[in-house]
Amino acid sequence: MERMKWLFIMVFAFLIFYGVAFGDASLEYKSFPSGKVLIYLTTKYMRMDAEEYGIFPVTLIYDKNLRKISILNHDEKSYVEIDKKLLKDLRTMREEMEAQLLLLPPFMKEMAKQMMIMPGCREIEEIPDEVCGNSKIIGTEKFKDLTAKVVDGCKIFDVEKNSFVICRYWFVDGEKLNLDLEDFKTLISFLEFEWEFVKAMDSFCGTEAISIFLARPEKTLKLGYDLPIPVKALSVSDGKEETKMILDKVSTNKLTEDLFRLPKNYKKIEIEVPKFRRGGY
View 1 (cartoon, one colour):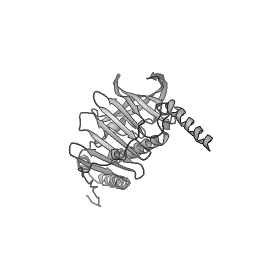
View 2 (view 1 turned 90 degrees about the vertical axis):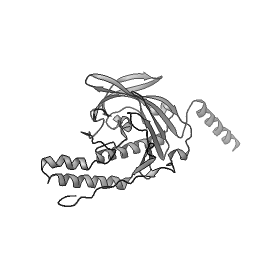
View 3 (view 1 turned 120 degrees about the horizontal axis):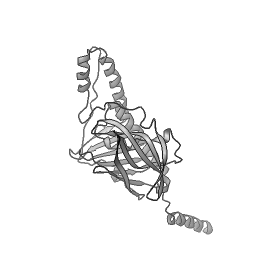
View 4 (view 1 turned 45 degrees about the vertical axis):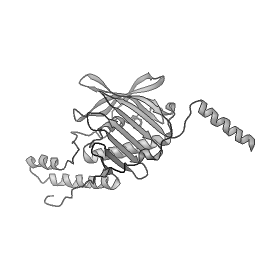
């Protein structure tokens, strides 16, 4: 028994010595032209703090078990919640709206669509079915002593153009950053839920910063990583390349649950989903 105890201690010390960490993760990205995005991950929660695009700083808190996103507006000290029921109601609303629009003359269709856009949301001109539908690996490069796969063809949302543009990404193996697979599953769960919300709303509704992370080429390409983490991204538009973000810091320190709790002095804003009826709304 004593021998087993010392064997366990030696194995644990070996893992610590060689930088193998298990648990929570924090990723800090520099975004351009100025700003930053911080992502905090546990096996249950994800939090993203973003300061960019010249808009108010925004925080997203995601509960994987409940499949619920809370979007915090720090300027207004308020928040909205997006859950499975709301997503279902939004899809139903869109189906009913499209059916009603067929009954309207052309000059009234655009007016009716504008009336349906919720405050703080800007309708996207065209949303792709898959962000990385036509992506391909074009090579490998070094990023801070790590080998990165360079992927061309994914798309990122350009706020100024209000449309998706072609982007080039650099992905590294998250295991080389000592990230945990279970934390990564929380990130994937969040991205899938957020993408459902964007398509249901035809808008990011203030969460544009997350579009950088929607690229998941591993769905169609063999990157060779179980944890593909984007470390750099640049857009390619009109023949010009523009850096969008670069991974700056990584931490695997333990995170407290307080980080994922809503501030007590923030007011919840209810999202009212319009109801349609035959002959109008």
